[in-house]
Image 1 (cartoon, rainbow, N blue to C red):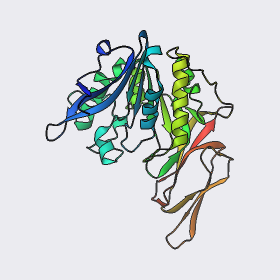
Image 2: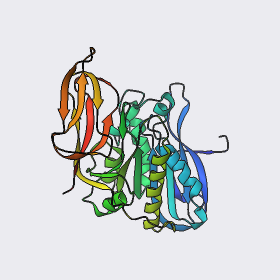
Image 3: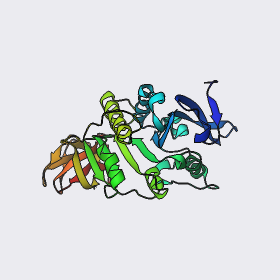
Image 4: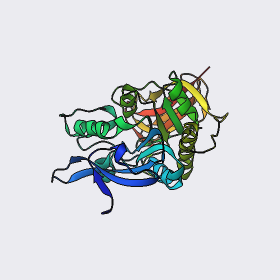
Length: 320
């Protein structure tokens, strides 16, 4: 750790070519004045080319993206690379150490981008992340997972009306792609405002490593690098099994109790099909929930304890 150079900002011109370099990027200081540093992996090719940024763990309990980035850098030969790859295995360092989703002040870091230069604890952290690092990217892939108590398919959120972003999404060979224009406050949304094509990769479930999801996420990134001519990777075309959705939404409960959700992720449900039941503490069924329309299950709740207004499942409406 002592051999890793500490930097205050990513300066691409100062990074040695033809090798992989590790850095600690200082963002803020904690309550004892100790610097809070982001780990960076940078592979800079000998030939010039695009800068692709890979970010993970913007929520501290979303871990699958970490080994995706680590494995990519083990597989990349920087002497044959055209351009630069910047990997940020952990964006939200304080929450990662606490095994929590939200930042120290209870804020979702992915809802306040690009932050503020002179704002709150989380706003300053977000602002420095964007200005010291993200603004230097030409493309961004932001890796996420489901939240606590839920599970996800391997799916992509992308603005499919943008031809560059659409191609980035299709190259991931995901189980599901959801057309989702970037919203204000997200890292992807801020990248879009900076004219950086970006997609969100939802790579499975929180708080654990899933080998299959990690492998799939890695394949999609190699596809993008090959498509951009940064590597000689053979691009695997989109799978016929990839489901394209025009939109998606969560279905919520209107009663509290013990929740059972029946469909599995990636399963197609028909309109009117029973998707969940809620029982009271005595075991009596008090409510059944039906699918409001045909769609594919992108993610779902797996926590039995469900309050009124809790999430049931994430339904994708397929492209016609």
